[in-house]
Image 1 (cartoon, rainbow, N blue to C red):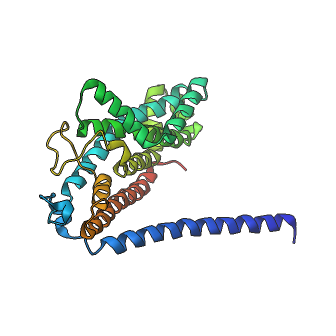
Image 2: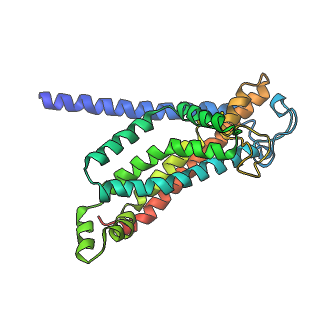
Image 3: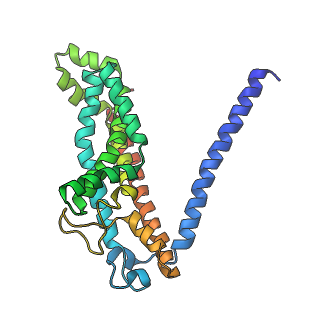
Length: 282
């Protein structure tokens, strides 16, 4: 057997083992969560808010956490998108391959790797300085800071894949740089941009550390952005710390609901991306 053939078989074996490890980990995770939580999952969990003694086994649900998570992740993703898309367009259309662009990309990569608890501690320090209380508003700001580097770098990579010939053709027709960026580049990169938005949404709705001290927790649905808001990850945490086995099972049921929300976002991303590919030039 030639050395090249042997190395190819080794690499192929490693790839197969890696794929099996990923699929096996996912299957084990889903099995444990569903097995522990399916018995506690009920309609009341998603239609009712906690009542007195909920964390000690009494009736109620986690509607407050579901709505709070959607409010927080949705608003934070929208706020981050307002900054990320212009930033990604600037890096590719106005500062291409410059030292500034490379420095910004390096900074975003560093921010991407910072643990979410650091973002929470940073926002909490500002809250203490301003004498502000934990609320949905501060949770949105914190999660927006958390997902901003993820969304920007993902959009940046999607925009970089747009063929240079499309830009040149647009310039040849008399379009300005801004018109080319907004009407040609964005439309061509739209599937990747949408994927970046939903990726950031999934990260935001599943994070607990960054909102632990900033968004607070409440057993009621927030009626204002300046009220505390519950989130699903914290609901899972608080239920798991309960000494009552029934409440612990509810924590796994809450985890199932969180997985379903993330799965819906992923499926929406795939369906939308396929529809938007009709505008992409191959």
